[in-house]
Length: 282
Image (cartoon, rainbow, N blue to C red; front, side, top):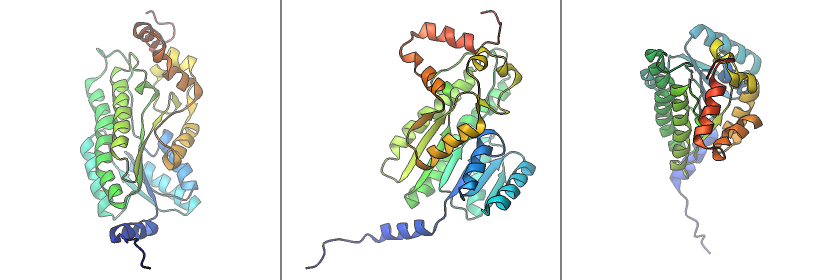
C-alpha cells in the first residue's frame, strides 16, 4: 500500500540548511553593562557572536578575550546606533560578510534624567534614535532572514519604566513603553513563522548607565540596583528558552503591578517622590 505522506521539498531544504547553520547571536551595546555580561555568558555556552558598540578598541579587546577563552568566532562592528542610519549600515555590512544572524539582542540604550523643560533636546532626540528607531530598524531587517529560515529569536531590552512611566524620565519612559508595546505586538504577528520575540524588563541595574543624579534619587535608595551579570543571566535564559516578557527581580515585579490597585493620581505622586532626589521638596 502506497503511503499518502507527501514530501515538501522546500521544508526539507530549510531543515537541512538550518542543520548546517550554527547560531550566531548579534548583541548591540556589547562592551558594557548587560550586553557585556550577556556576551560573556553566551560565549561560555560556545555561541558565535556578532558584537556591536561605538568604540572599536573596546570591541577588539572583547573579541580577543572571548575567542581566546572559549574558542568561538566573534565578529565586531563599530556603530553608533544613536543615528539609525548606522543600523541600516550595520545590517548591510553583516550581509556583506556572509553572516547569518539567528538571534538578535537589541540591548543598546541610554537614559536622560531631569525636568523635561531643562533637559537637552539633542540628547533626547539621540536617545529616541537609539532606544526606538534603531530597535525597529534592526528588528525589521534581521527578521526577514529569520523568517526565510523559519527559525530565530529577538530579545528587546525594555525596562521597569515600560510599566511605570516616571517623572524626570519622561522621554526615556516613553521610549521603553514603546519597546514593550512594539515587542509584544511584533511577537503576535510572528506566530507560526518559527521566529519569537521576547522582552527583558529590568529595574535599576548597577552599570555605567546610571548618572550621579540617578544614584541620588529616592528610587535607587528604596530599590537597590541589581548586578548586571544577574540581569544578563535572566536575559540569556529568556533569549534561549523563554517566551513573552520577563521582569527581573521580585521587587520590580511587585512595583510593576501597583498601578493595577492604585489610583492614577496617587500612583503618579508616588512615582514623582521616588524619582526625586533624596531630600528634595515636592
